[in-house]
Image 1: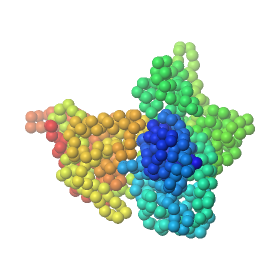
Image 2 (image 1 turned 120 degrees about the vertical axis):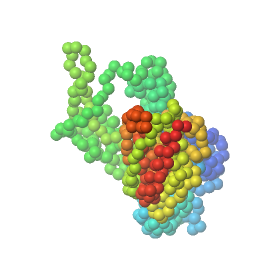
Image 3 (image 1 turned 90 degrees about the vertical axis):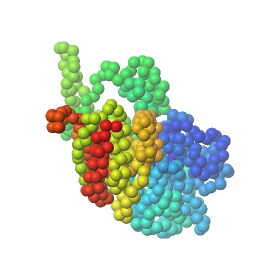
Image 4 (image 1 turned 90 degrees about the horizontal axis):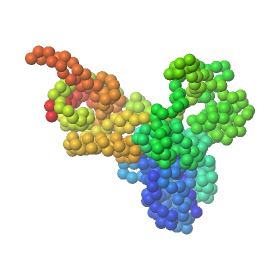
Length: 568
């Protein structure tokens, strides 16, 4: 029997929810055949079979949350016709989802192929080798640092084995699925042991995940997953008033629907909501940043009144686990949390309520982590320059402003194609696109999404509106797929729908331009007929000055204004 554990589905997320199974027990599956749809904080991902075989057991059902590294599918070993995979790392791609599986080496050992390191990128560059040919490796020992378009990640050894050959040297670009390291015969003998140990690992251990972040012990999904949160927002249910009936106290969709019937709505809680304030430190308090523990472990320690300084760290890389916190119960003074007087409405004659507050670091994950990495890459590579100007849109009839913005970007891209472009700063090459694929920056409670209106130059206003509506619906229901967010050639940020006149929008490589539209304003202008009130639209165009000249950017902005100032 072979056990396939849930791999990292990208972004180092600690778990994923089963959306639906695409196979059933007893089915014979082939290599790379999709088995299940899993939902992460970012997208719904198809997980393919790592080899040929017969499915003997499916671990979990639709709605269950599976931790990375926990058993997902069990196979009958007799039905397998392909070698067992090394630690697979799967992430969504624009075409399909692939799992990297080692192929038999001609020397009798195994070849470990480069897995997908996240975001469906087609290749990665070797930064430096951390091992040499002939080295004896242990399970999960870092072997090499690989650089993708987003980050530098360490690739761990999939089993305990001897390195026979390193495929490539620093600076070489390796394609996903191509050979990275060949192992000697020792790797074949010890691979099953590694596979077994992976199955027996605590589910919170992210050591075998390529590019995963350290998540401490037993970090599961928040008390409500993305689908449940979306349903709660739709029904206006206050999740803080809901008691979960699912596994490990997780809130289910049924719980949210029942809470709606019970009237547990936002704004109906009888308990005053905590107000974030800066908590002054006292001599006896500890700095939580001084201790390595996941947010879930920190919360567990707070619930038990245990100071992290009293815990003996036994987790991976010196992290504190929940078991460490449990073992420290009664061995430390209770955590003292400074009180803050919070002004609030109170009945006459009564004092103001005193609320206990606590300041703890929040782990940035999912969409926000992807945003942070994208912003860092842009800051490190792009040479940004911003032009600002106003468009007079007084003559506009009532219509969908967003569709007009997209139309103006399409028009300007035909007049001055240099900004509808991708730029390769390593090779100093640019790719001017014949079609216009517009990324739309969408704000959400989870972070910034940038879904794409593909072939915007071939769509009319109604089709653009429909596409935007579909994308927003996908964001709200957490069904946005990776291909919905890939391939943009230029981006639009309509921040003026919230606030702000001008800005310096951030270019997202390999794109070279982004247009920001600000808030309308009424302005008195002197015309041939006297003074008249005009509606002005502020525009901010940021471009990568490595790829575009100032003249090209100015012509592009002028073309945008020309189209926007048309009455129809």
